[in-house]
Amino acid sequence: MSDLVDSALTTRFLRGLATAPDRTAVRVGTSRVTYSELHELALRRAGDLHAAPGGPPRAVGVLTDRSLEGYAGVLAALYAGATVVPLHAGFPLERTRRMLVTAGVDAVIADGPGLTTLRELDRHGLRLPVLAPEAGDTGPDAIPAAGRPLDAPARVRDTDHAYILFTSGSTGRPKGVPLTHGMIRHYFRLADRHYDFHAGDAFSQTFDLNFDCAMFDMFCAWGAGASLHPVPAQAYRDLRGFFAERNLTVWFSAPSAISLARRTRGLAPGGMPTLRWSLFAGEALRAADVADWQAAASAATVENIYGPTELTLTVTGHRWSPGTSPDLCVNGLVPIGALHEGHDHLLLTPDGAFSAHEGELCVTGPQMTPGYLEPQDDEGRFLRHDGRRWYRTGDRVRALDNGELVYLGRYDSQVQVNGWRVELAEIEFALGACPGVRDAVAVTRTTGGTTEIAVFYTGELVPAARLTKQLAELLPKGMLPRRFTHLAEFPLNSNRKIDRRRLAEEADGEAGGDAAGQADAGAVGRTDGEAVGRTDGGAVGRTDGEAAG
Image (cartoon, rainbow, N blue to C red; front, side):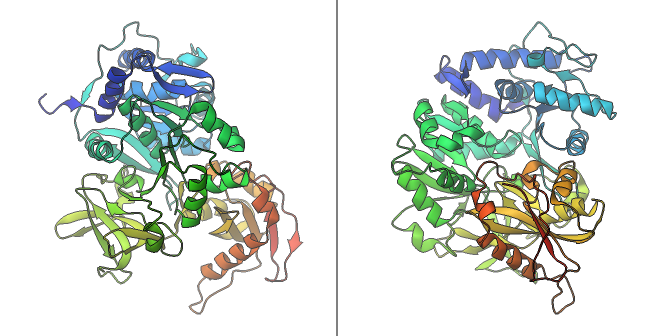
């Protein structure tokens, strides 16, 4: 058909293949695969998918770690002309089931851990065709090897869904966000003009495949013929050594990685001499953190880039200048920059008016999603103005005199925790389902330079370890609270509503003197401690439970 085009993402990989066919496309640990090898593997996997008993799938779940099979799986799904639905084997079973059903996944590519999850889902009544060549699976739902790879990647329409990603939802269920090929095409066209990536670059990958920012690493690297290097957790204990071993030139992570590197002494002056680019997104970036990072990576250009999943990876960017950027910061936070070409913004005030100075950021343009998979989720997230549809980010921003924007905080209950977009209402919803809990309020606190979740709850006093175990069946690890505080009753404000501000201040006050929280540099979000039963005179009947470090 005349409206079929080459996928922007597969085109990028093919460009890298033409540039550097025998160079490393991905290195995981000591294993590496070249562009030619990954291309041939993806064509074979795509051929398997096309020959599946039910016919070529429309949506392919990629239930893998950041493994060679995972990267081949993403590429194979795209080569097959299907929508990629990246998933995480460590997520709670019900959450994964919901994502698979909501996205209409009709085939799954899995590695060993992913296959374990699928077998558990099978026992709970959800059975899907599975391609798991690494595991050598020969079960009844296994997609057999077709024997014939595809000749070339399938063509698509720009309106087709390239990816479906899931964000936290205030109703207690994740929200599916489709990203079309057209949205992605616009994004990477701008990225090519903005960055000077080349075949000699080595990209970090700190984000799991189910994070939208993982697409940036993969397809910026592959579009240039560069190599991609997933960063294992243990590398943060010796970032300097990891950088030296891989000769990394492009780093991209959430800003919380800076605090983690600082605590593990990974920010030694001159410790990252090979870096050319240092990119940060997913959380507010502090000017003080930029200064520490640049001391270790003095040759690198630093950018603060911003964008909700609904606006395709990132939609603004501020390139740090030591001479001018500090004067543009507000509350110590680095500006998020100006909108990408082709986009407009409005600043919506709480009373529904529009401001030229400060308000909730609303964006429209070619990177905006057409809407959530479940239409009821659109309510309150989009508005109509001036004949156009705008996405309401929920982020409060201020317009600077130079036309850039600076992030000030959230208007709603959504927060950023270690790169996760988290609806606090979802945590409260999940905690309310735990036996013994009557009501719950979730807040954030800052400790050791990172943001973590703390909850206050009423009802019975429940050990923190038990609450953590129950929540882990409902929420991903990155969304688990770090501290639980039992209250006889919640404090109320003058309007007789729960005083959330006071609870947030209490949580922040506790964090300031919490040595245990500051010492926990090993695994962000780990919450495996028992309630210590300490009674605090600050609130009647209050008992605090800190997760063990």
